[in-house]
Length: 496
Image (tube, rainbow, N blue to C red; front, side, top):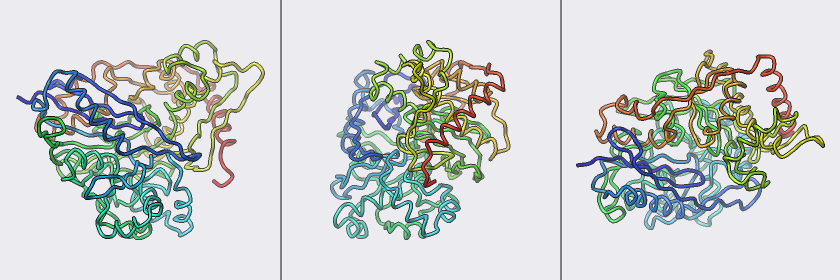
């Protein structure tokens, strides 16, 4: 009897595998970090084969930890770091260049060329996105330019392009399936979210051949099967979604107007807008949330490039803390930041600024500034960045946010969550089960395989929530946020 669903959660710094039972509860997990490469300032790359091997190792490891065989799996679901771009040989499955990570700024010049050609409005109208290095299309162009003969091989159909979901699906199925789904396709800068097809005008602008593109399918349904030699049994792969859309689904934000924020390496605020795409006038992007049974839903999204990575930098870059959990006690050791603001624009600024050339800045330093002030300023920067997005979403939707559902590693920090509630002025709700990204992937897979009838069967798995209520006076909130806005202004580039 098939009793479990496996979720493969392939993130920016690690590959994880989680096993969910019929009740939607986590039975076992396994996780392996992989190497981050920074070949030049602003560039971020991964080894695609290391991504694959770490993910396979996690999949095998979670089965071993649970003491079950792959024949007990009803389905496998995949969720992944989005926009990260891989090009590989169709015949051998070998990558021709390192994976260019979503954070990387190495295609800024290509983006500028597109802008100079007057394509901004066309890109926005067709894809819901802005021209930015964040998205996949310019990364494909970079790779085809960087590798001798790659353009000709791509045109001949010898090369495959994919985001990480497509790469894993290709490897898991031993090269039998080259496909993606709506949420990941909508992040590529070359997919028309209205026609739901690869866009010929944008493909032409970037000289990307259709022959290298994956087939786009529903997010829930049969994609293929894991090759028997990998796990010991063939297992259907029946659900895929980019990590933020998977978190939106896992948080139960399945009705228009519901909002979640994920505090991972970056910070990602999404609002479900239902079956109609909503255009942002405030710097947010329009994206596809998922497709189920041929019906797609859309979302508004704001992306902060550096959130949890700020805490990692405080630990690894400055050596101010030994572990991420130390940041909470340090922040509580001082009543405020002493006027210090940290803007962690290490790889530019995402929404709503979209400034590829901005760089990190610390303002307000005095002789009285201590380690604790800097750590607290780092945590507060995550909440301020989220406030930027919440304000944009309120303007675009006309709705005032009453409750923000949160997930991701950094939301375990009670200080950060309370400050988040204070600086936005709304309730922050943290579920007991924080593995909502993996839960979303498992839910899509379980529904696609008939393991669950509908998502309501999973509601109890998230458990009771912890609520953080806003307690900061309105005038103090306004003054703190004004200081943040001034700090951001100082860190912006003169080119924006």
